[in-house]
Image 1: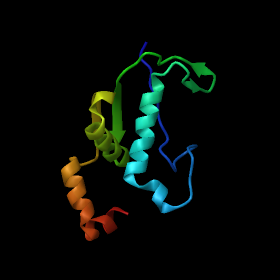
Image 2: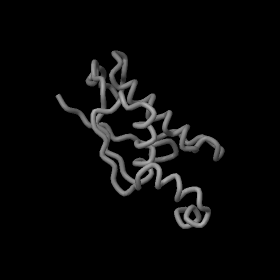
Image 3: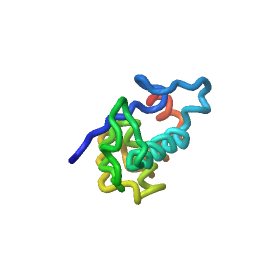
Image 4: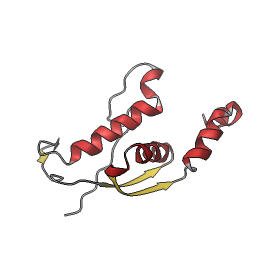
Length: 111
């Protein structure tokens, strides 16, 4: 049975909001998503009184937008075995994103 999970990234919605800018770097957030995808297929996974609906699943189909797209791309490069499919919208190729972000003028416009 197909299921959909929408995730609030760290600092958004009802997710944790740790203090300090160091807690919001790309690697930290990528790691959060990595752990979440891994946890979905575990027998003891639990979301608000719903258990085991994802038990045995091995790969995710991830749809990501904007900042989430950059996060998903980074994770797909790091851990491709977690993905069945990856769909990203409104985000450049990872190499282009990195080059644009290095340029302070573009970074200022993005924030």
